[in-house]
Length: 173
Image 1 (tube, rainbow, N blue to C red):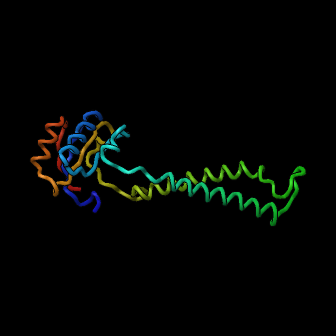
Image 2 (image 1 turned 90 degrees about the vertical axis):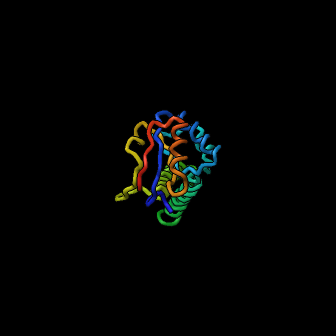
Image 3 (image 1 turned 30 degrees about the vertical axis):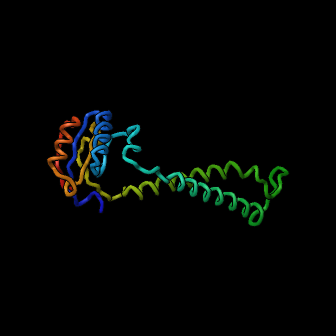
């Protein structure tokens, strides 16, 4: 189940240090955090939330290798079989001459592949509308969200009051 079709209780914080302290308190109290929202990356938040490292770099490596092989094998076929021409006394299969084009094609395939993969994994793209908790989350506010069906609303509100949340809201996504 995604974050859609859920009743969410969330607290807004004005500072990332307050957010980090609140996450530590929630983890210490064994509260089940649905998600944490921030307008920019917060150093030290990933280990607190026990998030795994992204595997996007593996996809980038694979896309880069596909691009390098495409360029190298394409130039090998073109310059040895399809159109063998001797340039400046070089042999038909001149590997050092292939290196710049191979590198540039590798970078091109890796960058395009990683962008497409990132957008696909994150559910972004043309025509996709994602629900937002609060419009200020992309500007200057930080939030911790809890699934209202799994927690007691009174406990969550007292947690937000204790940790210094600026606002506490409930929203159905």
